[in-house]
Image (cartoon, rainbow, N blue to C red):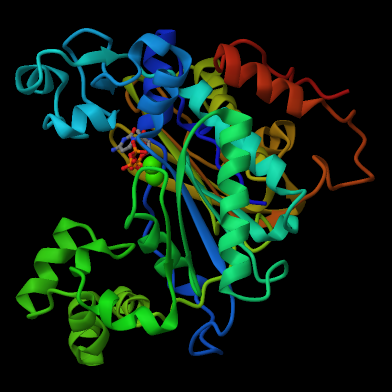
Length: 433
Ligand code: DCP
Ligand code: CA
Ligand code: CA
């Protein structure tokens, strides 16, 4: 099962409330379908059943659930609870009065003076989808569950249903289960591919259940193209310039015209419009592996003293290793880049014997590279430190090299502490044993 966590978006330091706000805002809510996820060996899915689930007015509904006084009232979530900030979402009562996601709270209050604006509490919302997807494991195989965003998931029902009637019964069961577990309503869409299922969810909200079957194609083709997954207002405008307004226009348009305008993404959009989305449930296993990680840090005051430079290299290495561990990857090819005040960028690289995400190895390799650079001096100080790691390998444990002489460190626990209390709470000593 693929799980999304926003913990990597937490900024270092800063007040608690700010972090919570950032955690949610920076979640990758809508990613463009990637062409590598499509299966080009088949033209379209045949007799497969995908269910898409999306919570109604998510953050607002949760707040109304937790405080009965807010029920039936126009409520918005986002901002600091006063008039500052942005409306991240609002209850259906507020929507009826003209409040919209993305407005400033100030603007929303002018349109709807009785609006109750609440601050956002990210961790509470994040836990909900995790809870219900855990429960789904009892109903469908684990690799049929994909968390897509903070309030959305896909389920493939093909292994557990035999036709649409069965699938609808199953969808109703899921809706009831969510209501019983979390006391929240969801809207669901059912179809033979993921994009059409996601499209169907929007048809009836709140608490809806909609189905798109093969024979509904003429109705789907009449809808505006912007309703499709991956099409936002900017792409909508560019499509309009090609004379494409509806899903049907996109489905029937000239292949080369969209390819010329959007490249491979145009081809994907056309396929999605035609109901030829051949993606399957994305589990952690099928996830594309990152090709490289890099991080650059520019100092406000350039440095030259050996201990300062060493400390900066060590810090950047620690950060890179934490990033790799978070993604369960280990790298083998390391680049160190420095920018000197007078010499410009200089880069050196080294290939390691085995992939690692242990900061002791990365620090040692980086220091070995650093010795190849001209030594920083008061008249040529270092302004920027950069590290890139290529040749990434997926790992299951933390240390791959069984013959290593150093003790294995509890990196999982260390990372947890850093995530919770900030980068500086704990550091690994680098003196070799
Ligand atoms: N969200 C956010 N920033 C955005 C959009 C949404 O922080 N730009 C948050 C608030 C939403 C949640 O993500 O409650 C889910 O987003 P949706 O787009 O699914 O919107 P809602 O669930 O609020 O409403 P709907 O009933 O239309 O799905
Ligand atoms: Ca939603
Ligand atoms: Ca959503």
